Amino acid sequence: MIWNRPMETMARKELEALQLQRLKALVERVYHNVPAYREKMQAAGLTPVDVQSLEDLRRLPFTVKQDLRDHYPYGLFAAPMREIVRVHASSGTTGNPIVVGYTRKDLDTWSEVTARTLACAGADADSVVQVSYGYGLFTGGLGIHYGAEKLGATVVPMSGGNTQRQLKLMQDFGATILACTPSYALYLAEAIQEMKIPREKLRLKAGIFGAEPWTEEMRRELEYRLEIMAIDIYGLSEVIGPGVASECPVKNGLHIFEDHFIPEIIDPETEQPLPYGEKGELVFTTITKEGFPVIRYRTRDISVLHAEPCPCGRTHVRMEKVSGRSDDMIIIRGVNVFPSQVESVLLKLGLTEPHYVLVVDRVGTLDTLEVWVEVSDKLFSDEVRNLEKIERTIQRELESLLGLTARVRLVEPKSIERSEGKAKRVIDRRKKQ
Amino acid sequence: MKVQQISVFLENKSGRLAMLTKVLAQEKINIRALSIADTTDFGILRLIVDQPDAAYLMLKRAGFTVSETAVIAVEIPDHPGGLAEILDILAGAEINIEYCYALPQKSNDKALVVFRVERLDEAIRVLLEKGIGVLKEDSVYGI
Image (cartoon, rainbow over all chains, first blue to last red; front, side):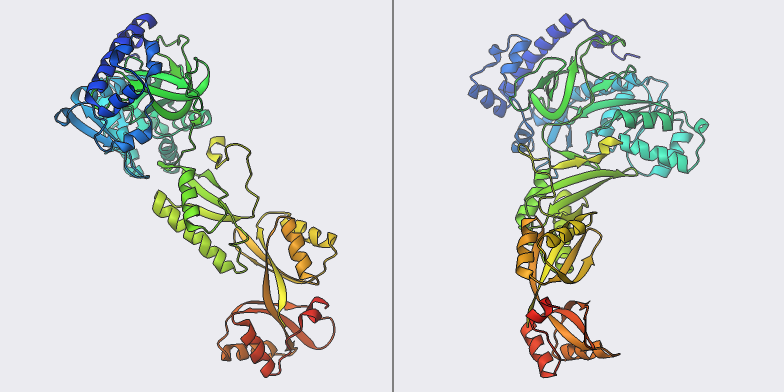
């Protein structure tokens, strides 16, 4: 089912004309309302009249996460606060959180794109949508919630956790669509199995899963265990939240809702745009947002864009499942972790060699983090308790910085692989499953 | 009277100890005594060898994390209560023992125990005062 057929199947030429018109309006808007954007454009020698074609988008400066932090909380808002009706925010594990604001029209836009996402999974007014993404400042729960209401479906606003109750209500209320992270879906599948809930007690048809990277193998697992269609969805709060892109039942890439977001793929090193079919970093420009628009926002997510027509009829370009990050951020139990944070702890303590590696794995459905650190001659003590004390100290520091427990393991010097170029700081064993 | 013990950090993975003993064998270094203190992740190997300085250098060159620690080797009467007597002397002087392990003794009727203690010099002094045999390093390396 296609929610907004005129928009989602628009001929490319028409779509591009619409994008250009919206892009021009956006550039005008931020130039006049957001000093930070104006200064950046002026520094690049640009004024809004310089944007005359979609190609001109490439002349505009990038926006990066640090810009968002620097202008915390409201510095990049392009609408007056009286028009902002909602804010969402990231968890802010490193310094200031990212704050994003929505006008009433932005909430409509957001509902529109999440309604499309749900329709991609076959949802309609007869559906019962169990929203098991977290509600609150996180965009997942409320984003899907409003989309489901717009669709006319029945929403069960469960939020995350409380698995027993999730499963009871899933049966009693007859949920047909499940919306949550893929790892929580797997957890629910295991609980269903353990509680021996017969499949005929469930009416589930499809799941829309996102907010963390997941593999084709994980899809097979979820589709097999839950007997549903599992759809990958993509979004980030800086752009709008869930609803930036969604797979259709063809499951051959995620359609980016291009009438609202212009995607680009760039080489993360040279920052030059790459053609369709080439792998690089995803960059988005929001062309309809009022409260918190972004121009050429660097997501750090690595993907590939494809423009060939899709059998589903949608004309919007597709992005491949995100295959990694251009920085080395990893997501562990929903927490963003950068190896540099671990490094700063080790350097601050001065106890070990700065050679370390983060080993991420999944035990059952739970992500685990181990930090391997090389012992140095300086640090080496003949006494076990001294070494164990060092392990505990590092562990405690990491826990207070990251908010999650990491197991610290001392390893022999030179046992961590050296690299000539960029050090390999992360071994992610979750990807193999 | 202070014996140089070689301590090596060993990750718990197969082949490391084999590798280490091979390095010593190649250098014709003879192991007199050894003990391993281990945890889930790593172990600390403690060695008494005939040429401690050479062993230290060779192991370091082979990429091991090595340190030298001063310990004492004490002769203990080889009968029930022999060890208790020594421990009592150290306890009387309020000297803590970090760890200890036995050393094989080839001839004579005494047992040999290696002690790592805090306040090493004082430990040597009180043991000697009580007539306990604290071995000279050369005699330990040459056992």
